[in-house]
Length: 127
Ligand SMILES: Cc1cc2nc3c(=O)[nH]c(=O)nc-3n(C[C@H](O)[C@H](O)[C@H](O)COP(=O)(O)OP(=O)(O)OC[C@H]3O[C@@H](n4cnc5c(N)ncnc54)[C@H](O)[C@@H]3O)c2cc1C
Image 1 (cartoon, rainbow, N blue to C red):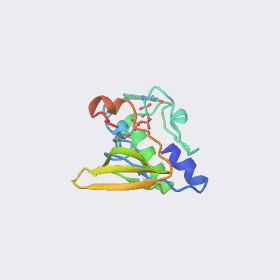
Image 2 (cartoon, rainbow, N blue to C red):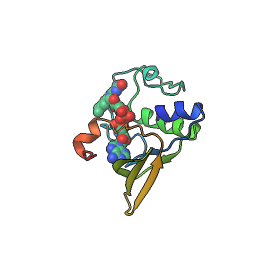
Image 3 (cartoon, rainbow, N blue to C red):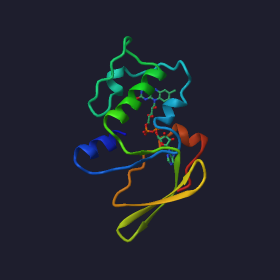
């Protein structure tokens, strides 16, 4: 999301492809999980994250990042999983599968992979 915001501000269009809902990793945090970072340290795109206590809990972070996505008008394709990425001439071919069934394909000049760490323990990526 942070990359998408920065690209958008430079006039470069981008699309986030997310296999679940946005900020899925935080969605999967334990319900009452308190972040070890202060809310200020968790800010992205320079958008203030203000909480009563210095360290936010899961639901506050979820609300914050979802508000950021909305406010920044980020283009997000949720519930679509990237299954492979191939370089074809000068473009990347990104192949996806919808959670509800069906496949899709995108051609892109550049690809940023931000598939996290924690989630990989559960599902794994094969590319
Ligand atoms: C319990 C807990 C507490 C934490 N507390 C803190 C803290 O206080 N401060 C801090 O700085 N960090 C904390 N972290 C770490 C922080 O959550 C991660 O560093 C951060 O989420 C990494 O961001 P990311 O965008 O790289 O990956 P993620 O947030 O993991 O995002 C990756 C996304 O990619 C999606 N994805 C994966 N594979 C595919 C695919 N094939 N196709 C489409 N989408 C895919 C996933 O669904 C996920 O939504 C904590 C982590 C845990 C588990």
